[in-house]
Amino acid sequence: STILLKMVNDLKPDYIISTNDLPKPTHRHLAYEDYKGTREKSDDELAHQLGRAKDVFTAFGIPTYEAEGYEADDVIGTIVEKTKRKKNLEVIIASGDMDTLQLVQEDRVKVYTMRKGLTDTVLYDEDAVQERFGFHSDLLPDYKGLRGDPSDNIPGIPGVGEKTATQLIQAFGTLEDIYTAVKKGDEVLLEKGIKPRIINLLKEHQEGAEFSKKLAIIHRDAP
Image 1: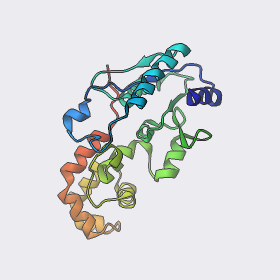
Image 2: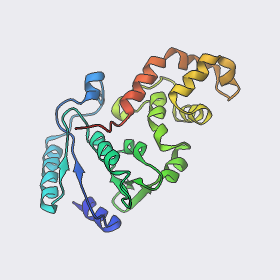
Image 3: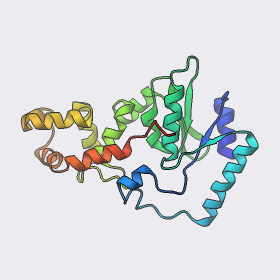
Image 4: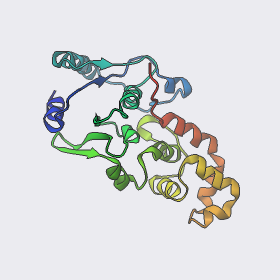
């Protein structure tokens, strides 16, 4: 409730919607059994609070959208896709989930999130994403394809961390572009400062990297 009131006060939105996860497995769980497998089960008290959150939204007249087989992020992505071209409409996603940064688009779609506590907030536009990661927002799934994501148990390439993933993306672009370079021969990667150990890891784990990217992409076609 406090976050909702702060968001309304800070952003003064004309419209608000909320999205919700459903308890059933999503398309990611069906594709990868261990998706989010490292997370502890939510305790009963939190589950009760999440249920009450819906009551708060109802009291404020805020509609909640959800779709079976999709996560809340996918529903957000779908709503962004449907509204991002509306003239004179600025879309702001308020979320603690940094996966939503891949939806940022210049000044039309931004992400409002909290760094520490309730008072330290940040509004990510394209420049802010670029400053934090060193590349464009739509390359974040490629980044996770390389580095993985421990919070969602997305494997990525073992042995490739933040620094190397960033270096590869800055040098070549998308995961597909990186593997195009791999096919051309080691020299192409060596010229960009990629170490032989990393080149071998890329070759060894191509299928895992591509699968990890697929898991990381927010869907924009929820019903």
